[in-house]
Image (cartoon, rainbow, N blue to C red; front, side, top):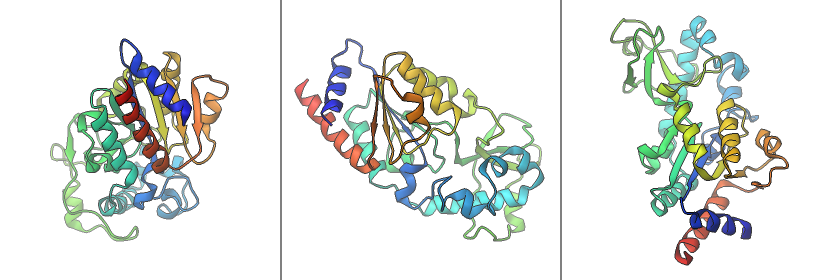
Length: 279
């Protein structure tokens, strides 16, 4: 980790201190009991009758199979509600408290565990949406609503009761609500998924730490490219090589750390505190 200390010193010594940004994915929440998406025991394998994510996780599929998709999402909501923030989430809270003005989290996760762990809502950018909000599937307006209470399912094959369907009606037009999450056949935008805000953050990021994501979607890869383009460092913290490894191969300001998120964040926080004392 000697090089990490030098990178942090370099970032702090700049006349205009750049942000330290964390880009998090499903791997960060695995220790909370939430399966990742594409692993052999992942959400898509266990929860969707062996559908490929790119087939099941689409608005097109939802339009034709509304009950099946809502069963899956209500089951997943129940899973998220039972999960608790793990040590990595808590370490990110500690790191934010160390550098509150220079800290951001950009997350692909929709589980809300960063919020529940205690990170500031203004510092969290959920680029794939979240399971706290719903909106009209017919897009009758731009309104988003809080998830109706007490509608999570304990089993993936549990029948959705009539009273739950009533809660899933749009209050404006009576159409069916949908989860406020980004599906595979939809596009990033600023209103719902903060694409412009996060690209601006990446432009002003001195150190981008990528944790628990393989970089399988477009915006995370663009954020990495943006950070490197404007002179920032990218630290890839994953257990295995991935799409990010290939994207950053040969880049002088890109480093890989093949360790758990707990191990890395614990050491990062320790070095961060040392650098603050030195400087």
